[in-house]
Length: 140
Image (cartoon, rainbow, N blue to C red):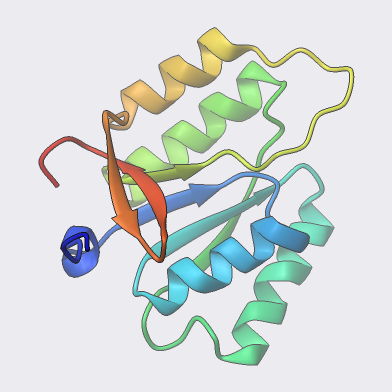
């Protein structure tokens, strides 16, 4: 049996892309319930804000973790840069990235996305949790 992870024993910050519904929304709910501060992202600002309100109304995110919204289109370099600036300014780091944004027939600017993640701390290791894994910084 695997040892329990201590990854969430410290205050963590996550970004979940494509999080205004479905699996992305549930990931936000679960991370927040574990005390993680979550940035719920969506291309559509109205839908993203509605999703944050839904989580707050359910009280599933309180009092453990905070859920905030930021608009993100993972195919737009300017949108990615805006998210990086937001995370850097507000939290100073990013511990968890869940890339859940669905794209059909669209090419992701992978270099810009990877560069943006690296600017806020990047990821280099896996942490076992909830029967799955979270990406995080090595040694944490």
